[in-house]
Image (cartoon, rainbow, N blue to C red):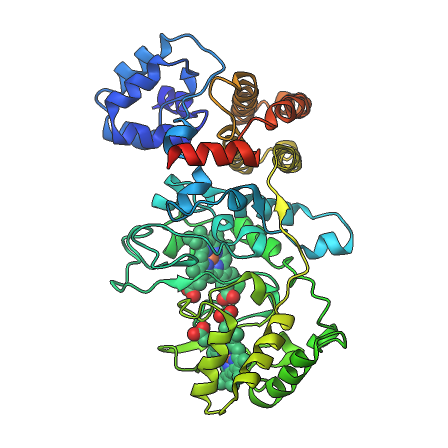
Length: 479
Ligand code: HEC
Ligand code: HEC
Protein backbone atom coordinates (compact mmCIF):
# COMPACT_ATOMS: atom_id res chain seq x y z
CA UNK A 1 0.00 0.00 0.00
CA UNK A 2 2.76 2.61 0.45
CA UNK A 3 2.86 3.48 -3.26
CA UNK A 4 -0.83 3.89 -3.28
CA UNK A 5 -0.77 6.13 -0.25
CA UNK A 6 1.80 8.34 -1.84
CA UNK A 7 -0.10 8.81 -5.07
CA UNK A 8 -3.42 9.18 -3.42
CA UNK A 9 -3.24 12.83 -2.46
CA UNK A 10 -5.15 14.31 -5.30
CA UNK A 11 -5.24 17.93 -6.19
CA UNK A 12 -8.94 18.33 -5.87
CA UNK A 13 -9.90 15.12 -4.31
CA UNK A 14 -13.64 15.39 -3.94
CA UNK A 15 -14.39 15.92 -7.60
CA UNK A 16 -12.00 13.32 -8.83
CA UNK A 17 -13.39 10.95 -6.30
CA UNK A 18 -16.96 11.23 -7.45
CA UNK A 19 -15.90 10.89 -11.06
CA UNK A 20 -14.00 7.75 -10.24
CA UNK A 21 -16.89 6.12 -8.55
CA UNK A 22 -19.41 7.16 -11.14
CA UNK A 23 -17.64 5.94 -14.14
CA UNK A 24 -14.23 4.55 -14.79
CA UNK A 25 -14.39 5.40 -18.45
CA UNK A 26 -14.98 9.00 -17.59
CA UNK A 27 -11.91 8.89 -15.42
CA UNK A 28 -9.89 7.70 -18.37
CA UNK A 29 -11.19 10.59 -20.40
CA UNK A 30 -10.17 12.90 -17.64
CA UNK A 31 -6.80 11.26 -17.48
CA UNK A 32 -6.25 12.20 -21.09
CA UNK A 33 -6.78 15.84 -20.36
CA UNK A 34 -3.84 17.70 -18.89
CA UNK A 35 -3.62 16.54 -15.36
CA UNK A 36 -1.37 16.39 -12.39
CA UNK A 37 -1.30 12.67 -12.10
CA UNK A 38 0.75 11.83 -9.14
CA UNK A 39 -1.99 13.49 -7.20
CA UNK A 40 -4.92 11.56 -8.45
CA UNK A 41 -5.87 8.17 -7.05
CA UNK A 42 -8.43 8.04 -4.32
CA UNK A 43 -8.31 5.66 -1.43
CA UNK A 44 -11.94 4.69 -1.41
CA UNK A 45 -12.04 3.85 -5.05
CA UNK A 46 -8.90 1.82 -4.80
CA UNK A 47 -10.65 -0.52 -2.50
CA UNK A 48 -13.46 -0.95 -5.02
CA UNK A 49 -11.37 -1.21 -8.14
CA UNK A 50 -8.27 -2.62 -6.60
CA UNK A 51 -7.66 -5.04 -9.45
CA UNK A 52 -7.24 -2.36 -12.04
CA UNK A 53 -5.67 0.21 -9.75
CA UNK A 54 -2.09 -0.69 -10.63
CA UNK A 55 -2.84 -0.30 -14.35
CA UNK A 56 -4.30 3.04 -13.58
CA UNK A 57 -1.28 4.22 -11.72
CA UNK A 58 1.01 3.21 -14.58
CA UNK A 59 -1.22 4.83 -17.17
CA UNK A 60 -1.59 7.98 -15.19
CA UNK A 61 2.07 8.27 -14.46
CA UNK A 62 2.79 8.25 -18.19
CA UNK A 63 0.97 11.50 -18.74
CA UNK A 64 2.97 14.71 -18.55
CA UNK A 65 2.66 16.74 -15.42
CA UNK A 66 1.06 20.06 -16.06
CA UNK A 67 -0.42 22.68 -13.90
CA UNK A 68 -3.96 21.95 -14.83
CA UNK A 69 -6.72 20.25 -13.05
CA UNK A 70 -9.14 17.42 -13.20
CA UNK A 71 -11.94 19.42 -11.74
CA UNK A 72 -15.12 18.69 -13.58
CA UNK A 73 -16.10 21.87 -15.27
CA UNK A 74 -18.06 24.40 -13.26
CA UNK A 75 -20.06 25.04 -16.40
CA UNK A 76 -20.99 21.39 -16.60
CA UNK A 77 -21.98 20.86 -13.00
CA UNK A 78 -22.86 24.37 -12.03
CA UNK A 79 -21.17 26.22 -9.23
CA UNK A 80 -21.07 23.96 -6.24
CA UNK A 81 -22.93 26.50 -4.11
CA UNK A 82 -25.72 26.67 -6.69
CA UNK A 83 -26.31 22.98 -6.02
CA UNK A 84 -28.12 24.01 -2.84
CA UNK A 85 -30.88 26.06 -4.40
CA UNK A 86 -34.05 25.22 -6.25
CA UNK A 87 -33.28 25.00 -9.95
CA UNK A 88 -34.79 27.91 -11.77
CA UNK A 89 -34.58 30.07 -8.68
CA UNK A 90 -30.83 30.44 -8.51
CA UNK A 91 -30.33 34.13 -8.07
CA UNK A 92 -27.25 36.09 -8.90
CA UNK A 93 -27.67 37.98 -5.69
CA UNK A 94 -27.56 34.80 -3.64
CA UNK A 95 -24.33 33.72 -5.32
CA UNK A 96 -22.59 37.06 -5.15
CA UNK A 97 -23.50 38.18 -1.63
CA UNK A 98 -23.36 36.47 1.73
CA UNK A 99 -24.64 37.34 5.19
CA UNK A 100 -22.06 39.29 7.13
CA UNK A 101 -20.40 37.40 9.91
CA UNK A 102 -20.51 39.21 13.24
CA UNK A 103 -18.07 37.79 15.72
CA UNK A 104 -17.48 38.85 19.27
CA UNK A 105 -13.71 38.93 18.77
CA UNK A 106 -14.10 41.31 15.89
CA UNK A 107 -16.24 43.63 17.93
CA UNK A 108 -13.87 43.26 20.86
CA UNK A 109 -10.26 43.27 19.80
CA UNK A 110 -10.07 42.53 16.09
CA UNK A 111 -8.01 39.37 16.56
CA UNK A 112 -9.38 35.87 16.55
CA UNK A 113 -7.71 33.17 18.60
CA UNK A 114 -6.16 30.11 17.00
CA UNK A 115 -9.11 28.00 18.06
CA UNK A 116 -11.68 30.41 16.64
CA UNK A 117 -9.84 30.59 13.31
CA UNK A 118 -9.55 26.84 13.12
CA UNK A 119 -13.25 26.57 13.90
CA UNK A 120 -14.04 29.05 11.17
CA UNK A 121 -12.14 26.93 8.67
CA UNK A 122 -13.72 23.66 9.83
CA UNK A 123 -17.17 25.29 9.74
CA UNK A 124 -16.65 26.14 6.08
CA UNK A 125 -15.14 22.81 5.14
CA UNK A 126 -17.05 19.87 3.63
CA UNK A 127 -14.34 17.65 5.14
CA UNK A 128 -15.90 18.21 8.55
CA UNK A 129 -18.95 16.18 7.48
CA UNK A 130 -19.09 12.66 6.04
CA UNK A 131 -20.94 10.60 3.44
CA UNK A 132 -22.92 12.33 0.73
CA UNK A 133 -22.69 15.67 2.48
CA UNK A 134 -18.92 15.67 2.10
CA UNK A 135 -19.10 14.30 -1.43
CA UNK A 136 -21.46 17.05 -2.48
CA UNK A 137 -19.37 19.75 -0.90
CA UNK A 138 -21.80 20.57 1.91
CA UNK A 139 -20.48 22.35 4.99
CA UNK A 140 -21.95 23.90 8.13
CA UNK A 141 -21.52 27.22 6.37
CA UNK A 142 -23.74 26.17 3.45
CA UNK A 143 -26.74 26.11 5.78
CA UNK A 144 -25.58 28.58 8.42
CA UNK A 145 -23.55 31.09 6.36
CA UNK A 146 -21.49 33.23 8.73
CA UNK A 147 -23.78 32.01 11.52
CA UNK A 148 -26.90 33.34 9.79
CA UNK A 149 -29.40 31.31 7.74
CA UNK A 150 -29.36 30.14 4.17
CA UNK A 151 -33.04 30.77 3.58
CA UNK A 152 -32.75 29.60 -0.04
CA UNK A 153 -31.31 26.22 0.83
CA UNK A 154 -33.09 23.55 -1.20
CA UNK A 155 -32.09 20.05 -2.16
CA UNK A 156 -34.31 17.55 -3.94
CA UNK A 157 -35.60 14.71 -1.76
CA UNK A 158 -34.73 16.35 1.58
CA UNK A 159 -36.37 19.77 1.22
CA UNK A 160 -40.06 20.53 0.95
CA UNK A 161 -39.58 24.29 0.71
CA UNK A 162 -36.63 26.68 0.55
CA UNK A 163 -34.90 26.99 3.94
CA UNK A 164 -36.04 23.53 5.05
CA UNK A 165 -34.48 20.10 5.07
CA UNK A 166 -34.88 16.72 6.66
CA UNK A 167 -31.73 16.23 8.74
CA UNK A 168 -32.66 12.66 9.60
CA UNK A 169 -32.83 11.50 5.98
CA UNK A 170 -30.89 8.50 4.66
CA UNK A 171 -29.32 10.73 2.01
CA UNK A 172 -27.15 12.06 4.84
CA UNK A 173 -26.88 9.01 7.03
CA UNK A 174 -28.51 5.65 6.31
CA UNK A 175 -28.18 4.78 9.99
CA UNK A 176 -29.70 8.03 11.21
CA UNK A 177 -32.86 7.78 9.10
CA UNK A 178 -35.94 7.97 11.28
CA UNK A 179 -38.13 6.93 8.34
CA UNK A 180 -40.20 10.12 8.62
CA UNK A 181 -40.40 12.92 6.13
CA UNK A 182 -39.86 15.71 8.64
CA UNK A 183 -38.11 18.69 7.11
CA UNK A 184 -37.02 21.30 9.62
CA UNK A 185 -36.42 24.96 9.03
CA UNK A 186 -32.74 25.95 9.33
CA UNK A 187 -32.26 28.11 12.45
CA UNK A 188 -29.90 31.04 12.74
CA UNK A 189 -26.85 30.51 14.94
CA UNK A 190 -26.41 34.19 15.70
CA UNK A 191 -26.22 34.63 19.46
CA UNK A 192 -26.08 30.84 19.85
CA UNK A 193 -24.35 31.00 23.21
CA UNK A 194 -27.47 32.59 24.66
CA UNK A 195 -30.01 30.22 23.10
CA UNK A 196 -29.49 26.79 24.72
CA UNK A 197 -30.88 24.17 24.61
CA UNK A 198 -30.22 23.21 20.99
CA UNK A 199 -32.21 21.66 18.18
CA UNK A 200 -35.65 22.95 17.29
CA UNK A 201 -37.01 20.62 19.95
CA UNK A 202 -34.36 21.65 22.46
CA UNK A 203 -33.18 18.06 22.91
CA UNK A 204 -29.51 18.80 23.59
CA UNK A 205 -28.31 21.24 26.20
CA UNK A 206 -24.63 21.44 25.32
CA UNK A 207 -23.27 23.05 22.18
CA UNK A 208 -20.32 20.64 22.19
CA UNK A 209 -22.59 17.67 22.16
CA UNK A 210 -24.89 19.16 19.55
CA UNK A 211 -21.94 19.88 17.26
CA UNK A 212 -20.54 16.39 17.58
CA UNK A 213 -24.01 15.00 16.97
CA UNK A 214 -24.40 17.04 13.77
CA UNK A 215 -21.13 15.65 12.44
CA UNK A 216 -21.40 12.02 13.45
CA UNK A 217 -25.11 11.22 13.56
CA UNK A 218 -26.70 13.64 11.15
CA UNK A 219 -24.04 13.87 8.47
CA UNK A 220 -22.28 10.51 8.85
CA UNK A 221 -18.88 12.01 9.58
CA UNK A 222 -16.06 10.24 11.31
CA UNK A 223 -15.73 10.77 15.05
CA UNK A 224 -14.12 14.22 15.11
CA UNK A 225 -10.96 15.06 17.04
CA UNK A 226 -11.85 16.85 20.22
CA UNK A 227 -9.76 19.75 18.94
CA UNK A 228 -12.03 20.17 15.92
CA UNK A 229 -15.15 20.06 18.08
CA UNK A 230 -13.62 22.58 20.50
CA UNK A 231 -12.71 24.81 17.57
CA UNK A 232 -16.18 24.61 16.03
CA UNK A 233 -17.73 25.43 19.38
CA UNK A 234 -15.33 28.29 20.10
CA UNK A 235 -16.15 29.77 16.69
CA UNK A 236 -19.92 29.39 17.10
CA UNK A 237 -19.76 30.94 20.54
CA UNK A 238 -18.38 34.08 18.89
CA UNK A 239 -21.55 34.62 16.86
CA UNK A 240 -23.22 37.79 18.09
CA UNK A 241 -26.85 38.67 17.62
CA UNK A 242 -27.12 41.04 14.67
CA UNK A 243 -26.94 44.72 15.56
CA UNK A 244 -30.31 46.39 15.75
CA UNK A 245 -30.82 50.03 16.70
CA UNK A 246 -34.36 49.26 17.91
CA UNK A 247 -33.10 47.21 20.81
CA UNK A 248 -31.10 48.35 23.83
CA UNK A 249 -29.15 46.39 26.39
CA UNK A 250 -31.18 43.60 27.94
CA UNK A 251 -33.57 43.59 25.01
CA UNK A 252 -35.47 46.75 25.91
CA UNK A 253 -37.09 48.43 22.92
CA UNK A 254 -35.52 51.83 22.07
CA UNK A 255 -37.46 55.03 21.95
CA UNK A 256 -37.14 55.46 18.18
CA UNK A 257 -39.80 52.90 17.22
CA UNK A 258 -42.95 53.83 15.32
CA UNK A 259 -46.08 54.41 17.38
CA UNK A 260 -47.61 51.25 15.91
CA UNK A 261 -44.56 49.24 17.06
CA UNK A 262 -44.81 50.79 20.52
CA UNK A 263 -48.46 49.73 20.73
CA UNK A 264 -47.33 46.27 19.56
CA UNK A 265 -44.67 46.22 22.29
CA UNK A 266 -47.33 46.72 24.95
CA UNK A 267 -49.38 43.83 23.59
CA UNK A 268 -46.24 41.73 23.44
CA UNK A 269 -45.41 42.43 27.07
CA UNK A 270 -48.86 41.28 28.06
CA UNK A 271 -49.34 38.24 25.78
CA UNK A 272 -45.98 36.87 24.73
CA UNK A 273 -43.25 37.90 27.17
CA UNK A 274 -43.83 35.01 29.57
CA UNK A 275 -42.13 32.70 27.06
CA UNK A 276 -40.20 35.22 24.97
CA UNK A 277 -38.55 36.95 27.95
CA UNK A 278 -37.06 40.25 26.74
CA UNK A 279 -34.16 40.27 29.21
CA UNK A 280 -33.04 36.79 28.17
CA UNK A 281 -32.82 37.17 24.43
CA UNK A 282 -36.59 36.73 24.08
CA UNK A 283 -36.62 33.09 25.10
CA UNK A 284 -37.14 31.02 28.24
CA UNK A 285 -34.94 27.98 27.55
CA UNK A 286 -37.96 25.68 27.65
CA UNK A 287 -40.09 23.65 25.27
CA UNK A 288 -43.80 24.20 24.76
CA UNK A 289 -46.54 22.86 22.57
CA UNK A 290 -47.79 25.92 20.74
CA UNK A 291 -49.95 24.07 18.26
CA UNK A 292 -47.20 23.34 15.76
CA UNK A 293 -47.24 19.52 16.02
CA UNK A 294 -45.13 18.83 19.09
CA UNK A 295 -42.97 20.41 21.74
CA UNK A 296 -40.49 23.00 20.58
CA UNK A 297 -37.86 25.09 22.23
CA UNK A 298 -38.86 28.77 22.48
CA UNK A 299 -36.74 30.52 19.86
CA UNK A 300 -35.17 33.95 20.19
CA UNK A 301 -36.94 36.68 18.27
CA UNK A 302 -33.76 38.55 17.43
CA UNK A 303 -32.72 38.56 13.79
CA UNK A 304 -36.17 37.53 12.50
CA UNK A 305 -35.61 39.67 9.40
CA UNK A 306 -33.03 37.14 8.21
CA UNK A 307 -34.71 33.90 9.15
CA UNK A 308 -38.05 33.61 7.33
CA UNK A 309 -39.95 31.34 6.95
CA UNK A 310 -40.93 30.80 10.58
CA UNK A 311 -41.83 28.05 13.07
CA UNK A 312 -40.07 24.69 13.24
CA UNK A 313 -41.25 23.49 9.85
CA UNK A 314 -41.26 26.87 8.15
CA UNK A 315 -45.05 26.80 7.81
CA UNK A 316 -45.41 30.57 8.36
CA UNK A 317 -44.14 32.58 5.42
CA UNK A 318 -44.20 35.90 7.26
CA UNK A 319 -44.58 37.43 10.70
CA UNK A 320 -48.21 38.39 10.23
CA UNK A 321 -49.02 34.68 9.84
CA UNK A 322 -47.19 33.90 13.09
CA UNK A 323 -49.13 36.61 14.90
CA UNK A 324 -52.38 35.24 13.47
CA UNK A 325 -51.35 31.78 14.69
CA UNK A 326 -50.74 32.92 18.29
CA UNK A 327 -53.82 35.13 18.25
CA UNK A 328 -55.93 32.04 17.55
CA UNK A 329 -53.96 29.68 19.78
CA UNK A 330 -54.01 31.93 22.83
CA UNK A 331 -57.51 33.21 22.05
CA UNK A 332 -56.37 36.80 22.22
CA UNK A 333 -59.16 38.16 20.03
CA UNK A 334 -56.96 40.77 18.32
CA UNK A 335 -58.45 43.32 15.97
CA UNK A 336 -56.91 43.64 12.52
CA UNK A 337 -55.00 46.74 13.69
CA UNK A 338 -53.65 44.93 16.74
CA UNK A 339 -52.28 42.16 14.56
CA UNK A 340 -50.67 44.84 12.41
CA UNK A 341 -49.20 46.59 15.47
CA UNK A 342 -47.77 43.35 16.81
CA UNK A 343 -46.29 42.53 13.42
CA UNK A 344 -44.68 45.94 13.25
CA UNK A 345 -43.20 45.43 16.69
CA UNK A 346 -41.80 42.02 15.70
CA UNK A 347 -40.30 43.57 12.59
CA UNK A 348 -38.60 46.24 14.68
CA UNK A 349 -37.42 43.66 17.22
CA UNK A 350 -36.11 41.32 14.54
CA UNK A 351 -34.48 43.95 12.35
CA UNK A 352 -30.91 43.32 11.22
CA UNK A 353 -28.72 46.40 10.73
CA UNK A 354 -26.06 44.46 8.89
CA UNK A 355 -26.16 44.41 5.11
CA UNK A 356 -24.85 41.29 3.39
CA UNK A 357 -21.35 41.57 1.98
CA UNK A 358 -20.18 40.85 -1.55
CA UNK A 359 -18.59 37.51 -2.44
CA UNK A 360 -15.33 38.46 -4.12
CA UNK A 361 -12.09 36.79 -5.13
CA UNK A 362 -10.24 39.21 -2.92
CA UNK A 363 -12.21 38.26 0.18
CA UNK A 364 -11.82 34.60 -0.64
CA UNK A 365 -8.05 34.98 -0.94
CA UNK A 366 -7.93 36.99 2.28
CA UNK A 367 -9.55 34.05 3.97
CA UNK A 368 -7.04 31.67 2.44
CA UNK A 369 -4.25 33.83 3.83
CA UNK A 370 -5.84 33.93 7.22
CA UNK A 371 -6.30 30.16 7.27
CA UNK A 372 -2.77 29.57 6.05
CA UNK A 373 -1.47 31.18 9.24
CA UNK A 374 -2.97 28.17 11.03
CA UNK A 375 -0.43 25.82 9.48
CA UNK A 376 2.59 27.26 11.20
CA UNK A 377 1.81 25.99 14.66
CA UNK A 378 1.26 22.29 13.88
CA UNK A 379 4.33 22.24 11.65
CA UNK A 380 6.44 23.86 14.35
CA UNK A 381 5.06 21.48 16.90
CA UNK A 382 5.43 18.53 14.54
CA UNK A 383 1.74 17.69 14.74
CA UNK A 384 1.38 16.03 11.41
CA UNK A 385 -2.29 15.13 11.55
CA UNK A 386 -3.45 18.62 12.30
CA UNK A 387 -1.20 20.04 9.58
CA UNK A 388 -2.62 17.56 7.10
CA UNK A 389 -6.18 18.31 8.09
CA UNK A 390 -5.68 22.05 7.73
CA UNK A 391 -3.92 21.51 4.40
CA UNK A 392 -6.82 19.44 3.08
CA UNK A 393 -9.38 22.00 4.19
CA UNK A 394 -7.38 24.82 2.62
CA UNK A 395 -7.25 22.99 -0.67
CA UNK A 396 -11.02 22.65 -0.70
CA UNK A 397 -11.24 26.40 -0.15
CA UNK A 398 -8.93 26.91 -3.10
CA UNK A 399 -11.21 24.73 -5.15
CA UNK A 400 -14.20 26.91 -4.38
CA UNK A 401 -12.30 29.87 -5.81
CA UNK A 402 -11.07 27.85 -8.77
CA UNK A 403 -14.55 26.97 -9.98
CA UNK A 404 -15.43 30.61 -10.43
CA UNK A 405 -12.78 31.03 -13.12
CA UNK A 406 -13.28 29.94 -16.69
CA UNK A 407 -11.44 26.90 -18.07
CA UNK A 408 -9.83 28.57 -21.10
CA UNK A 409 -10.32 32.26 -20.53
CA UNK A 410 -8.72 32.14 -17.11
CA UNK A 411 -6.14 29.43 -17.60
CA UNK A 412 -3.56 31.57 -15.76
CA UNK A 413 -5.76 32.08 -12.75
CA UNK A 414 -6.78 28.45 -12.58
CA UNK A 415 -3.19 27.40 -13.10
CA UNK A 416 -2.04 29.63 -10.24
CA UNK A 417 -4.64 28.10 -7.92
CA UNK A 418 -3.75 24.57 -8.92
CA UNK A 419 -0.07 25.28 -8.35
CA UNK A 420 -0.93 26.64 -4.92
CA UNK A 421 -2.84 23.47 -4.19
CA UNK A 422 -0.06 21.21 -5.40
CA UNK A 423 2.60 23.10 -3.45
CA UNK A 424 0.47 22.84 -0.38
CA UNK A 425 0.21 19.11 -0.93
CA UNK A 426 3.99 18.84 -1.27
CA UNK A 427 4.56 20.83 1.87
CA UNK A 428 2.27 18.48 3.76
CA UNK A 429 4.07 15.49 2.24
CA UNK A 430 7.30 16.87 3.65
CA UNK A 431 5.72 17.14 7.04
CA UNK A 432 4.51 13.58 6.70
CA UNK A 433 8.08 12.53 5.99
CA UNK A 434 9.21 14.31 9.14
CA UNK A 435 10.92 17.15 7.23
CA UNK A 436 9.28 19.84 9.29
CA UNK A 437 11.95 22.45 8.76
CA UNK A 438 11.68 22.41 5.03
CA UNK A 439 7.91 22.36 5.34
CA UNK A 440 8.18 25.54 7.37
CA UNK A 441 10.32 27.22 4.72
CA UNK A 442 7.94 26.08 2.02
CA UNK A 443 5.06 27.52 3.99
CA UNK A 444 6.69 30.95 3.98
CA UNK A 445 7.30 30.68 0.22
CA UNK A 446 3.76 29.44 -0.26
CA UNK A 447 2.31 32.47 1.41
CA UNK A 448 4.27 34.72 -0.95
CA UNK A 449 2.95 32.73 -3.89
CA UNK A 450 -0.52 33.19 -2.47
CA UNK A 451 -0.04 36.96 -2.53
CA UNK A 452 1.13 36.81 -6.14
CA UNK A 453 -1.87 34.67 -7.06
CA UNK A 454 -4.12 37.25 -5.44
CA UNK A 455 -2.96 39.88 -7.91
CA UNK A 456 -3.65 37.52 -10.82
CA UNK A 457 -7.07 36.63 -9.51
CA UNK A 458 -8.03 40.27 -9.05
CA UNK A 459 -7.04 40.88 -12.65
CA UNK A 460 -9.38 38.14 -13.87
CA UNK A 461 -12.19 38.74 -11.39
CA UNK A 462 -14.18 41.12 -13.58
CA UNK A 463 -14.81 38.40 -16.17
CA UNK A 464 -15.11 35.53 -13.71
CA UNK A 465 -18.17 34.14 -11.94
CA UNK A 466 -17.39 36.50 -9.08
CA UNK A 467 -18.75 39.19 -11.36
CA UNK A 468 -22.55 39.45 -11.04
CA UNK A 469 -23.06 40.19 -14.76
CA UNK A 470 -20.92 37.31 -15.98
CA UNK A 471 -22.64 35.07 -13.50
CA UNK A 472 -26.07 36.24 -14.63
CA UNK A 473 -25.18 35.47 -18.24
CA UNK A 474 -23.86 32.02 -17.32
CA UNK A 475 -26.97 31.16 -15.35
CA UNK A 476 -29.20 32.36 -18.19
CA UNK A 477 -27.27 30.15 -20.60
CA UNK A 478 -27.57 27.11 -18.34
CA UNK A 479 -31.34 27.46 -17.87
C1 HEC B 1 -27.88 20.86 5.35
C2 HEC B 1 -28.02 21.97 6.29
C3 HEC B 1 -27.27 21.95 7.57
C4 HEC B 1 -25.93 21.69 7.75
C5 HEC B 1 -24.92 21.26 6.73
C6 HEC B 1 -25.66 21.94 9.14
N1 HEC B 1 -26.79 22.31 9.79
FE1 HEC B 1 -26.93 22.92 11.68
N2 HEC B 1 -28.93 22.89 11.55
C7 HEC B 1 -29.65 22.64 10.41
C8 HEC B 1 -31.05 22.44 10.76
C9 HEC B 1 -32.19 22.13 9.81
C10 HEC B 1 -31.13 22.59 12.17
C11 HEC B 1 -32.37 22.39 13.07
C12 HEC B 1 -32.32 20.90 13.29
C13 HEC B 1 -32.97 20.32 14.47
O1 HEC B 1 -33.81 20.90 15.12
O2 HEC B 1 -32.60 19.18 14.77
C14 HEC B 1 -29.78 22.89 12.62
C15 HEC B 1 -29.45 23.17 13.94
C16 HEC B 1 -28.18 23.52 14.36
C17 HEC B 1 -27.87 24.00 15.69
C18 HEC B 1 -28.86 24.26 16.81
C19 HEC B 1 -29.41 25.63 16.68
C20 HEC B 1 -30.46 25.97 17.72
O3 HEC B 1 -30.68 27.16 17.94
O4 HEC B 1 -31.04 25.09 18.31
C21 HEC B 1 -26.51 24.17 15.74
C22 HEC B 1 -25.70 24.65 16.91
C23 HEC B 1 -26.00 23.78 14.45
N3 HEC B 1 -27.05 23.42 13.64
C24 HEC B 1 -24.66 23.77 14.12
C25 HEC B 1 -24.18 23.18 12.95
C26 HEC B 1 -22.80 22.85 12.73
C27 HEC B 1 -21.66 23.12 13.68
C28 HEC B 1 -22.73 22.25 11.51
C29 HEC B 1 -21.53 21.64 10.84
C30 HEC B 1 -20.77 20.70 11.62
C31 HEC B 1 -24.08 22.26 10.97
N4 HEC B 1 -24.94 22.80 11.88
C32 HEC B 1 -24.41 21.79 9.71
C33 HEC B 1 -29.14 22.57 9.14
C34 HEC B 1 -27.80 22.30 8.87
C1 HEC C 1 -46.14 29.26 25.74
C2 HEC C 1 -44.96 29.96 25.34
C3 HEC C 1 -45.13 30.93 24.18
C4 HEC C 1 -45.93 32.03 24.10
C5 HEC C 1 -46.91 32.55 25.13
C6 HEC C 1 -45.63 32.66 22.84
N1 HEC C 1 -44.68 31.96 22.18
FE1 HEC C 1 -43.89 32.43 20.40
N2 HEC C 1 -43.01 30.66 20.32
C7 HEC C 1 -42.99 29.71 21.32
C8 HEC C 1 -42.45 28.47 20.83
C9 HEC C 1 -42.23 27.20 21.62
C10 HEC C 1 -42.13 28.70 19.48
C11 HEC C 1 -41.52 27.69 18.49
C12 HEC C 1 -42.63 26.96 17.77
C13 HEC C 1 -42.16 26.21 16.56
O1 HEC C 1 -41.01 26.35 16.18
O2 HEC C 1 -42.97 25.51 15.95
C14 HEC C 1 -42.47 30.07 19.20
C15 HEC C 1 -42.25 30.70 17.99
C16 HEC C 1 -42.51 32.03 17.73
C17 HEC C 1 -42.11 32.73 16.55
C18 HEC C 1 -41.34 32.14 15.35
C19 HEC C 1 -39.85 32.32 15.53
C20 HEC C 1 -39.05 31.60 14.47
O3 HEC C 1 -37.88 31.93 14.33
O4 HEC C 1 -39.57 30.69 13.81
C21 HEC C 1 -42.55 34.01 16.67
C22 HEC C 1 -42.34 35.15 15.68
C23 HEC C 1 -43.24 34.09 17.94
N3 HEC C 1 -43.17 32.87 18.56
C24 HEC C 1 -43.88 35.20 18.40
C25 HEC C 1 -44.75 35.15 19.46
C26 HEC C 1 -45.72 36.19 19.77
C27 HEC C 1 -45.89 37.45 18.96
C28 HEC C 1 -46.38 35.77 20.86
C29 HEC C 1 -47.49 36.48 21.58
C30 HEC C 1 -48.65 36.82 20.77
C31 HEC C 1 -45.84 34.50 21.26
N4 HEC C 1 -44.88 34.16 20.39
C32 HEC C 1 -46.25 33.82 22.38
C33 HEC C 1 -43.45 29.90 22.61
C34 HEC C 1 -44.35 30.89 22.94
